Length: 616
Ligand code: F6R
Image (cartoon, rainbow, N blue to C red; front, side):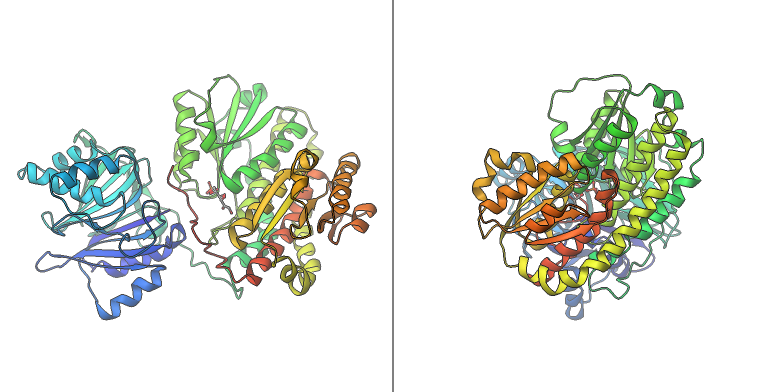
């Protein structure tokens, strides 16, 4: 989503703001902008540009504005086209108030109507611009209002989940930071302060941070910060030590971050297993449970979005088949709007790479209101999800830069498989030997993942990817644990290669989708190591071939009929179904990567998307 970064301090702000925006650009790349107050006359100056941050940087050659108070923004468009006009910062009528904003003002259109009726003139299609005009309007009504009084009257009128920053000529040397529903944190330095959507914007530069609590605003100057609730009452706050280090993530010779991240997966699994081995008996405390709670557990519910939800769907099979406990993975965005039946002895696991996905966070907040037990399974230790759940288990993917999740998905599967085994061992469903073997199996799956990429990549690069890149639509089929794997593969093809990909449980093919099969719609069929399920998959393959469909199969050694039937096939060694999904994912990701490359797509930053989805 959008990112906001602000700086107030002894230094000029531009370098700090641009560096922060560069680190957070994965959150949105439709446009960017920067505003600052001139150090001498306190006038607002700004620059904004359509497209990637580099377009903004170029503009500073001609217009090198800078100031000691500055705010910046990268945009993931929600309201209005991705153009310069809608790029942040946005302003009031007299350009004395400047706003950068992440989130959505849901009632912006009614506020806008009222403000237009009062004579305000708008210049963009965004919801954000109403904030600037609303501040202006409230300020005109009460010129003697203090900043907290002013902000209280503004936030009282805004509906939605948002985080925004304001810089105003009237209050120079000050950043006003407002948080409701979207993350915002303040980096505390000596004689300088940062405000940002994510600590990564300033990690490594200063080592203290304040995570702004829900429904608060802060008045930030270079040496001080005052926190208020939405009733303008002063609030205490906690300053935390910041341990997140900004690691300058390079591509290590790869053309794209996605490719580099695909190749890191074996080492991600190894690092995960090493990490799990350090977790001793106090592990239950860190995940916010007692052993007794684990013993009395009756159900697991996994809450997530997108790729993380696919990891959860696969983990349903881990928990049900290894622990013997009913497990469902629900989409966070749907879950919140369904009727809720509170139950005792349920563990809710929120799976999220970023730990900032708005739908997942809202689902967790809802569950907390109903006193349910929540566990964060996330890649980011400093995330809101870690702070808001009862406990957490960190995935060991390391920073993932490409928008399309690859190694984070594998790290999630690894952690969920390990957790299922750990819970099963605690509940005496498996022996200690089996539990220790599970860790070895994970390592083996990592080796297979990497070896299979090496084995298949030449055929993929030379023949298969260029061939399949010519189709504009496709069908994905899987069954049992390979159905959610097919869902993940189809999502990757959609998001990075822009190929319409419809996915079905293979058994559903004959109930309608078969009508779509023709020689222009390839079918990607995910087989299964289990001989009974394999036979069913084989029937689906025959149905496709009988209709002259083009069939690419992901098969296992010994599945001769399927191998002979398919037009193209990747053949994997026979492993347990639980681990087969990890062993096969690398080849699928590489295949999709090279299809996208053949189609000339912007692989690391696909159109219309952003890495961290912080709007509802
Ligand atoms: C797809 C992808 C997304 C995310 C989803 C949830 O490649 O990355 O579908 O999985 O937006 O994000 P997190 O895991 O950060 O909650």
